[in-house]
Length: 301
Ligand code: GUN
Image 1 (tube, helix red, strand yellow):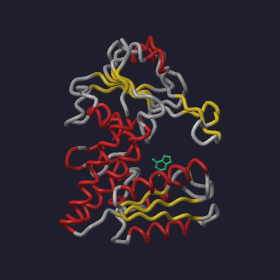
Image 2 (tube, rainbow, N blue to C red; image 1 turned 90 degrees about the vertical axis):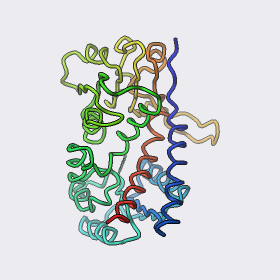
Image 3 (cartoon, protein in one colour; image 1 turned 180 degrees about the vertical axis):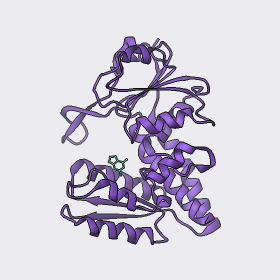
Image 4 (cartoon, helix red, strand yellow; image 1 turned 90 degrees about the horizontal axis):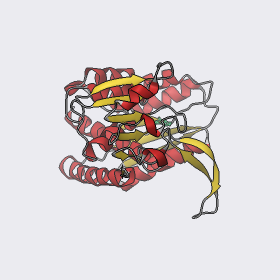
């Protein structure tokens, strides 16, 4: 039987509707509008398109949003001063510095300069520490892992006691999603295994997974025979494997392929995310959720 296709666009739209209501309530009850600044250094085309999409969503949700474009050659100390300006701006609740940054800028320094209470990416070590401790301590969830967890829960999969296998150990996806799924609490309580490039037998681990989360960045890495029948498969891979002409605009657009062999895997899995249209649409929505949370914390301070 063919798997249920997990529609990330539809689930993201559902969450954005919920957020819109929260934003309206916040305006009515506290006169506060969530504020987000996205800082873009240089004009890397992929970064421009990500930042444009983030700003568009922020506008749609009724945020106060600022797009701050800086030249490719901005000195590091000027960028740090700019972050400090937004750290001290009460209208701004979330600060996002689009990565990657040019080579002359130390990314770690930049991430560490953001006020942890405005770190809506959840990249700051303080927020990652809070995430590890869990429960009340957690402030923000990193956007892609938060989107993955929502997709699993809203697709009706039981996580408590489930075998979750995470393929990949990046700081942005693999490590945080593993921690989130093992925590005590709703949408978690799973038994988690993390596998990576040095794991001896990837297939045997994947085959055990009730929920398989793949964030390896290797197109088509996971083969259908690695999937347990009925499993929930979340494919985080967004690999550019070529270009094609868009039917809508006539412009050249990238051909994207996930880390899972989708066509074959959907005949075995119980549910699976497509690429594109699965995890991707969720990431920006979870950034918006973090910005709403940041504004709520600021009200409560
Ligand atoms: N570059 C690619 N993805 C991201 C993201 O989620 N946050 C930031 N800040 N930069 C990115």
